[in-house]
Image 1 (cartoon, helix red, strand yellow):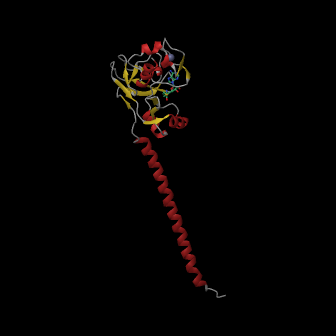
Image 2 (cartoon, rainbow, N blue to C red):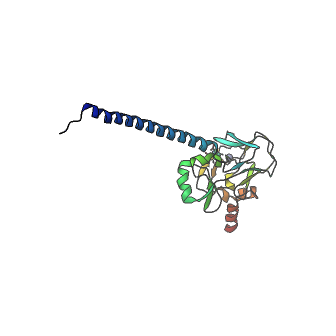
Image 3 (cartoon, rainbow, N blue to C red):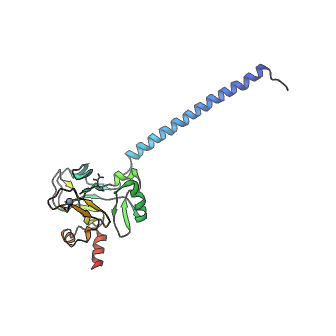
Length: 216
Ligand SMILES: C[S@@+](CC[C@H](N)C(=O)[O-])C[C@H]1O[C@@H](n2cnc3c(N)ncnc32)[C@H](O)[C@@H]1O
Ligand SMILES: [Zn+2]
């Protein structure tokens, strides 16, 4: 076997070392680029994800004595003024079942078969209107997604609607609204109650009014 002289071996070893340095350098650049891209993506996701819902500049979201966060008036709001408009994607019950596992309650029903709300965690915040339920509410729904003041509202008041006017669901929930006429336990079937249908005449979601009309 022919032996390479020592001088001949040195060149390939030097090449190998330069190649290894080059590889480490390229991998470092790649890792840094991936890191920078993911930081940029999360910043973009958090800062310029557009709001899917509209909230009046006269209202703000903050901690609520009812539960979690709620919507509050920060300026006087006159009866009839639009307070918020629910936005999002339109999807059916199968999609709702899938997304609600991770997103929780963040949608509103708009027809017998369809719902409106966010589809991803990033969209959830901008799609929420944060209207907690109250048994003595001050905002009501027009159509299916527009919420208006049902009376004049003072700054500082929490903006709430009665979920009997929007929901057709199977839940029962202990109510923490604290109003004098609190029902204590509310249900996703409260829309069927005639007393509530009368109380909220003109403020029931369109698809519920349609159901009530068809039920005769
Ligand atoms: C669509 S979120 C409303 C915003 C919620 N407070 C938040 O911070 O995300 C619905 C949840 O709010 C809570 N909630 C709203 N109204 C309530 C009430 N009157 N009593 C008890 N919990 C209420 C329930 O936990 C319900 O699942
Ligand atoms: Zn209540």
